[in-house]
Amino acid sequence: MATDIQNRTDIQRLVDTFYQRIRQHPELGHVFDTVAQVNWETHLPKMYNFWENTLFGARTYKGNPMQPHLELHQRFPLSEALFEQWLTLFKRTVDDLFAGPIAERAKARAEAIANMMVQRLYSHSPFNFTE
Ligand code: HEM
Image (tube, rainbow, N blue to C red):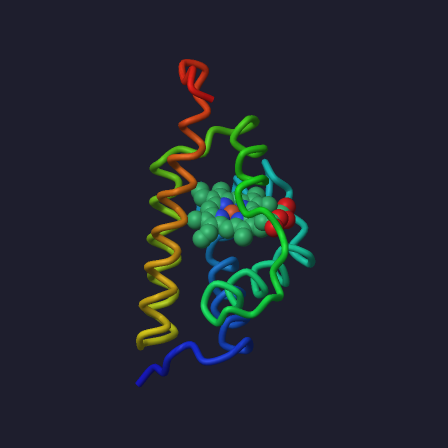
């Protein structure tokens, strides 16, 4: 039986597996590897820190999660459908590896952040005069 996400080693396993799958995904793989040309050696540790912070309150992540997505969106529109695919893959990866309250929290946080990101990206429309 799967156990819950308990520590940074578990987070590393989750993040590594998730981004391996991202890179094999026909659409997401293209965005990460061809459009954004992500440097995986720096991106993966950043994501370990991000999730350690999100799930365990560790103060290892310093950064602005929104910024790279805003920049990327200027060059390659990140559609709501693409975020949905990201989220589906993330949830499936969590469920394949872990089970328990922290695993549930990881999926809920990912969903909340994905929703927030989509809202932020699309509030930057040229017709939004309140900006
Ligand atoms: C379609 C969906 C998404 C795409 C295509 C995407 C793509 C990217 C790319 C290209 C980067 C920059 C990597 C680099 O060059 O270092 C990045 C960074 C990041 N992403 Fe996403 N992302 C998506 C959704 C999400 C979601 C839903 C979350 C949160 C749960 C998230 C969290 C982050 C974080 C924390 C960073 C690092 C930000 C920093 O530089 O501090 N992403 N993403």
